[in-house]
Length: 252
Image (tube, rainbow, N blue to C red):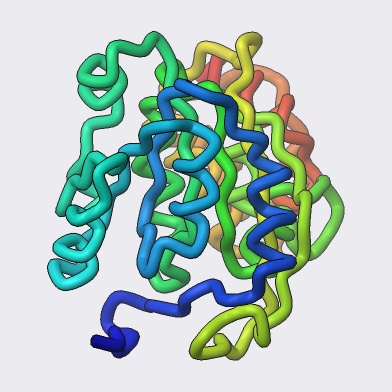
């Protein structure tokens, strides 16, 4: 029976064999590697992945799709909202120090998923995700560009990232209204030991009024905290490199 895509789950199913092959080659799965796929859907990526891996764990929220996937003998199916999954426990259950993660993320909750995974970075070897291209552009953006923002700082603190493939709407069924892309995310071993909640608050304040100089936003926030150190607030938030935000978070 044909599965009807559900709008509330943001379902757009990958259907182009050439794109599927390109994504699998970018992921480069090897036999017996512990890998988790988020949102396998109709198994377009799942099947070529499991053929190379031998076994694959998948996380699927849609109960009808989860039931179909359970019929596959090489899949370990977790029927759950990915935002409730503890990936440290998952790595332990798979008997792995680190796991690989991939998936075509639902566009309506892609950022929450990325932030949910952030605390588990030490348990992750790498991540390959398909997302809206405009989201990936923000993830990998450099300072002094329109795309550079909170997402750029928070993710670049913890990952080295690269946009590896652009995916047109017609590669999906049904086609989304946006162009997609695939990003490779590799957790950094040399990341700054900042408090994630503090960094998140700091960056959120900084980018709360992008067009204003930081003295109107971050400057007042720093004053309220009694910060007496040196930090140039005569700039806009997008002009400050990631390293400077991290250095500031270590000093406040």
